[in-house]
Length: 405
Image (cartoon, rainbow, N blue to C red; front, side, top):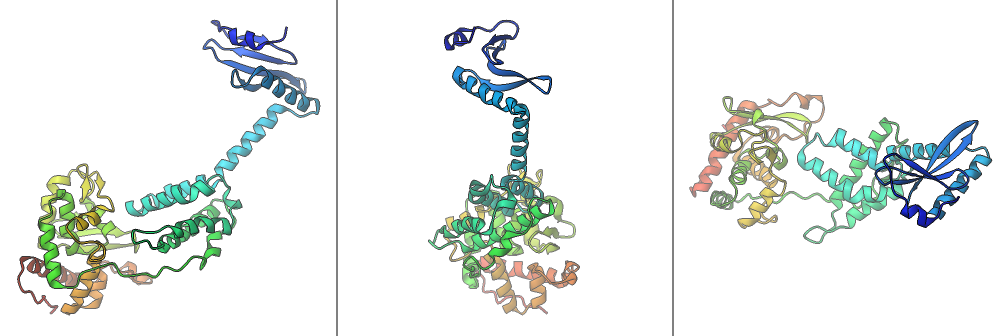
């Protein structure tokens, strides 16, 4: 007897699996849990084999018979349908393994995630929002330069808060795609760096200095406003300390307690920007701030951390805090404190080399790698003099600046 839809629907499970047979090797396997699986039994090269054809009711009786007939035609032509299915799964697995998404996320986990939190989070966002939705399932070796350029132009066409195209971001993504494709080449998933073909294809970004303050009275007022800011204590501490150490904001946020030496009054860390070790001499005012902060976050990893120092401040926190006390991005940005210190210290007569080294500017060549302690004695004097100068401005005193000897 052949099967009927009514008979299949009404069939009840039993304690053991049972089979309901149709014609041409097709049967329905009913498991004790009620699952109903279509199976096709056939012989190939003298061996009995089974091929799964799906489940009922997802696959109807007619659908199962059509699949059985297709499989029987393959067998009649000397082709094993089970092998066809295995080959298809193998190809699908290879496609996934070689896809942009798989290779890109492997590159991200290996090369990008260990870097700074801000850099890795930005890169992850570009991958998830701007690249994987369009390139994710395509094999790395099959993506060409025009296809990648379409993704980059979508990034470039977006506007920032001022309504201007974010050409800097688009060019940054292009550079990162060069890193990704070189990684893909190294693991055998691509033959050449197609991102290199796109140099000059995007509008060049015209760099502009971060907004900063060079007016002593305005700087003094800013420091007083920071003192009166009623935000979270960790944020307040970061705002007070950043102008006195003038490191990159991302480096400040990623500061770890293990890198702070209170006895030596130093903060040492590896700069992900310049790929060199850096020393920040800590003025007395900074040491006091850090000692107070240690009571809040000292049990965690990060100096300027949340959740008891277990996670660093977000990238936008200091920006938002400055805006909340009336200092928008066109007046001062967190990165601008570096420009403020560099400009005003130079006006005070401090040596350019001393300032540049404290800013951790990249020194070209092998020589630069070994200069983390260069001018360190002079830098200690300069950092204390700068903290005293800023403190004087904050108090409202008339300060002419402590010049280098």
